[in-house]
Image (cartoon, rainbow, N blue to C red; front, side, top):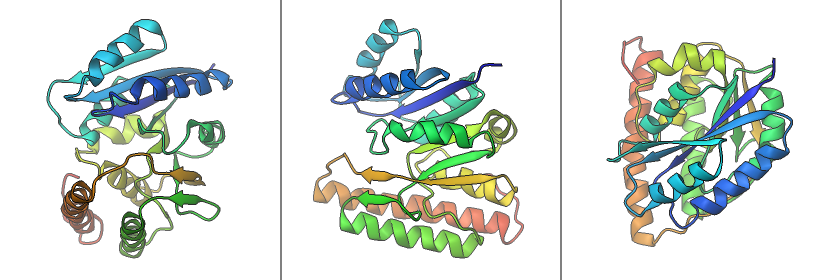
Length: 245
């Protein structure tokens, strides 16, 4: 049976880059020896992103979209897209393609032996270019997760991941997290339930430029969001308290 790759692109206010980046992704997928579908999960953008996406859908039968009038969260958008996907292999790539789609060829091959294949900015052999403070906080956060949950994953939040259909069908319904921390939740769940995980080192060049004030607000927001998620995961897996995460 021919394998089908469902690749989801979560998108929020990406009007300046979405058309070009989707074209890059589509062209690369076309070079792979696999069938594919692209699902753009647009989450309440206010900059005209959805109008551009509608044009992309009309131009290609390989692209379809999911649209929310209000912003409900990246995790929510991803979950809805996963549930609507048709592929044997299902994954996502961030719309800014800081993690380039060229890594998908090896990652798709790895899904033949692994339930979860995640790109990594911090595994041995990787290379990352991003603002110093964000890089430092990320490294501390991932070190903390490794210590708390006794695992050897070096990057939980990289925006390029693939999953087997079996994993998605069994586990996606249990993931309740709607925020950016969705990535951390699904990896911890996979680790604790004994799924096979492959971490693939990549070169990451951060694309989005954020002002200092906006960057500080984002870091503060991330601190509270991820802090809350760590507490809930710790309570669930280390203390045995039944919680939805």
